[in-house]
Image (cartoon, rainbow, N blue to C red; front, side, top):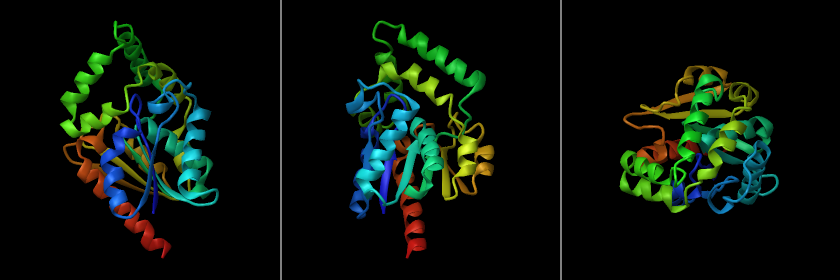
Length: 239
């Protein structure tokens, strides 16, 4: 089962180390990509078009020009994975959208962008604060995986601005394939999860107990178990 992993904002492909190692060990073909403005592509401009092109290139690299993948996105990566699924349903066998069950618009997004701008005014643009919060909120291995690919401090405002133009509820309604919405129990981005679930044609909601927003890093074994279950279900349907 080819599995493409798409990271969250400020992070990079390195955040998926646990999942890449575990799923590769299962015999799956797994690829974690960097979005523009992140990781090895940190000097690139983040736009909707560039982010979707990065996912499309990852799908082709993993499965060829006509193959299909299980697309897994978390937070920022989740929103763009949903948008990609709506635009290219023929390239996917299924979609896992994690930690992205809040509509990215309105006062919440405005407040998030305002806070990000304030933090960016700090002398180090918020690097110390970011690293402190990461190490306090995640287990040591998860924190190291997040920070290993670098911290994309400049991408916050353009990334949030671009994401505010997306319409994930409409996109989920357009995607005909199976969708798994995966959220941590204490994720502040699960505000609209029932609306997201209702928008899916074939959707399921999985809430991981005790997990915060970065569910794949805080509870890596449980999150990986979900991906294994999804891959097994999809593989059995294909055969």
